Length: 431
Ligand code: CMC
Image (cartoon, rainbow, N blue to C red):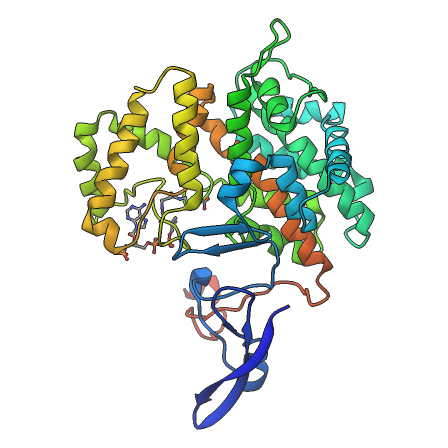
């Protein structure tokens, strides 16, 4: 719980209003202006929410100046090194690291829900054969509410739990099948004897004609990508899930909304855009041209994989990702990968450039993830779906936290209206 020991005073037209100031466990204090409109008849104006906390949360904490990311208090680099994705899922969902028995039980529950209702294949087959896998995922995840009615009552904690497990378990199957469909290969069923990341790689790369031996180093790298993307407090897609959920919408519909939001290039779509940019640059000698474009106010081009709303220092996830990229490329014997060379040189040049230093623009998680996924054999169109698979647990943990919060009400921002004032309708012949 936040502490409230101080108040802030707002003076407007000679009248003073007192507002509680909440002190969180860590991080900046927050003025509680919930009663501002009722008492002073004014709104606050904060487009894009740069200074607004939308909720209390116990799940994830980011210190943007330090470049620190904590899941339930645990630093991301420790979790990436010592834990694994399903353990991290448990931590995010239930608040504590599991005991061995709890973990085994959780892994069993997730593993037993990996199959999709057989009829759902018809949904996949309804899409154009070259559909972007994100388009397919938005549709299929939304359609889950049509198949799993018995877990759509958000007022029932047991149904919420079942929906959570179902989504975590089925999302890799959905993403892998969206991929298979987009390349015209048969769907590969999940294998419950494999761990989460290995099973995902199996469903993506095995075919009925040939089994696919998943290299444990690649499986570990995939597991790490999932861990690093699992949650990131109130980012755009998570806020979308919370806002959709605040109306009482069912969890499958809310997560579909989150996937739609994640797709944009300023958010989860940046990993695809980043690798495409690195390929377009092609060779290190062309980097200065792109740096100049990124700095040019009249050019909409931005260095993809650079900058972050909250991090004003290195994104801690990018550090782990770079290390993982080195490992994977080393394993595959492609250290001289031209894309990695461009990325390394681009990072070096940008970090020495005053424009990027002054604006505190550092590489973010998307800068290196694409290089790993590309080396694993994924096309760029699969990068954002893999982000969606990984972030599903974060969205669900945040959604569950919101539903269980007795203070939760429908989210409803206000606006500063700058359109036409009241005017009377004019008949068409008089316009
Ligand atoms: N390249 C060049 N200039 C940039 C960049 C960039 N990547 N990012 C920010 N800037 C400049 C921007 O032009 C602005 O300059 P000025 O103050 O002169 O107008 C200043 O830095 C602040 O940028 P902003 O757009 O106001 O910052 P924001 O917090 O609204 O945007 C961001 C954050 C991540 C959308 C943005 O940095 C960006 O577009 N980055 C590239 C896309 C990207 O990599 N996104 C992935 C984010 S991490 C994963 C995720 O969240 O999904």
